[in-house]
Image 1 (cartoon, rainbow, N blue to C red):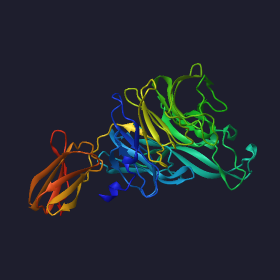
Image 2 (tube, rainbow, N blue to C red; image 1 turned 60 degrees about the vertical axis):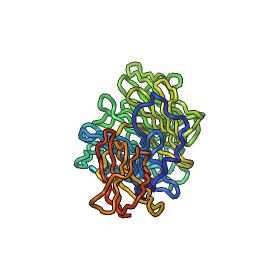
Image 3 (cartoon, one colour; image 1 turned 180 degrees about the horizontal axis):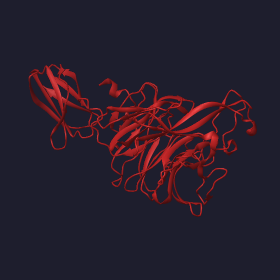
Image 4 (tube, rainbow, N blue to C red; image 1 turned 90 degrees about the horizontal axis):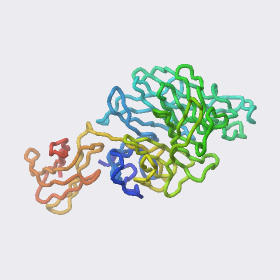
Length: 446
């Protein structure tokens, strides 16, 4: 069981505001940043900060979420190396039994980036990719033979890995629209665009977020042509009061012209006093953006990177505060319902809330600690199981003759039960709310 406990201890998460009765159902999905002495990896916790599932990974991970693949719910995330703010890695897809279904990788010599991964109903995946290229930056005060950190949208067929679409930011967006300063050194790559989210709009075209141009772009999914720009230096929309945003993340469109995003308000420069989740209404007939609602942190926070805003089923809003280590849930009208803080010096690139049923393909695990001549502590756990309501301990002097000696409701990721009497063999059984056996551990020899 040691590997299951090697990640960030969820008990270090502080529940600042306990969940109100009208929070949405579900678990919290995180990829907490690596802390000294802890492994990194995707993790699921409940609102009481109890761990549900953790998978240690060798390098880094971001963006754990529930998506649909071939009509079934799956877990997806990015895994790989973080290279100065962008990623070189790939995208695992796991089923509800925590078995790897497949792994998606970028094509055309690119690497999967940490910022975005979207599965579509057509069996394709959309994701971000970055690459250092040579470029003439003299028109913006840089070197004629300068380095550019260029950004790409790529769509691949999940089953075959075939690249179906690729969009190149440098070919469609002018360099002078960036708010990122051009490096004075010719050896430094200029991150002029910083692509950090992709979503499929209601008409099938793509909407992307560029942090360093302070703009959201709608792209023709066939040609790559920019259909419109929201915010930034050359917005196609008239920006109404309270609609301007800066260094943003996680732009999403919704039916009826709604757009949501996480407005960091700070990055290379600080443009606002605090970050916010933001709802806008886009009228593409009049090309006007109107403020709808904002979701403010309490206490005040100003994130300089990362962040997410999620509309939950039923109307609530879930906000991950990026490099500020908080996640929060609000009503649609911006009343704070729940607020929690990750451990000091940790953060999660995004934070989500989803309903999820996990049925691990692995067996439950049990371990035994001797407390005395005829007293044992039996520790039972099942990484990822969401339907366990109680545990039974079966014990005896012979492996083929075990009797029920202890029972307990599930008391968290690990449930500890005291057993008295002589026992050489121990088994833990997990039961659901109806009392049915869900799984049985291997026999432990005392």
